[in-house]
Length: 369
Image 1 (cartoon, rainbow, N blue to C red):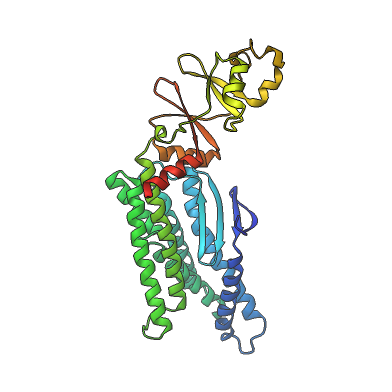
Image 2: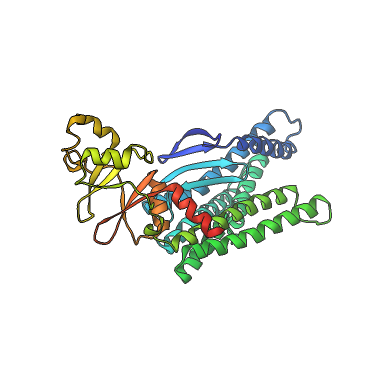
């Protein structure tokens, strides 16, 4: 997974660490170790151990935040492919979008809710338990970090949770999830540029707020928001098309009444290198498939008398969709099932042809030209 390191499973969800995580782990350990060293009259290795513990607890909070999203998604029947911690926090990769906007809203808000609960938990410990100064500092810090994590993620712009909340609200109002995604992406781009500008001004010591990290986080938000906007545009184009629009004009379709000799001469020898053909009856209904290799099952001396319908195989492993199905749904189905091709039938279940990934890409390129 792009160089990510798998470290186990959490509630059946694969858990990964991006190599950038180790850099930030070391940086956080160093920063908090230096701060905690002030609590010891003769600091040795202990402040750095506590700094490392603080860093681990910090990332555990980020992990809990992502688990909040993931467990709500699982409750909706959505598979969580992975959780990954990286330089800027964490991300839960979901199999698909929620079916309804309020379900999408629940997934989006679950992470900040977990962070707020952790803030309350650590604050109660800090206020009600008598702890040594170093531990008191760690507990207070963890409470503040979870509060910042919740509030920062509620900024209404993708890829932050607040952006997903905004997307769900626009989706509910307009009935169009792509519209919600596009608007939330535009907000994300605004906040990304804002972070970059503040970061640059702070680095040049013009602004009293922000830092180099503010600009870096802004760049991260801007990059992902721009990608989200691009995806939203593509999905909008796909949602305006149907499966029939993407059917290959030269789909490999043959009639069951053809003899093997006719099939070989007209469709195999010297023709496009299709290795498998869809077979229809005289009414145009799909009855099965035949592979070029199947010709070897019959002696060539019998090719003039044996028809395709005598050796056709049933369609078991190929997925079908109806011609009026939204092309965006078709693409999502292809991605979810990792298909190379899909069969398209009309309302009378007559065969129209095949859809392949390159054909969809070609349609999008034509639409953007």
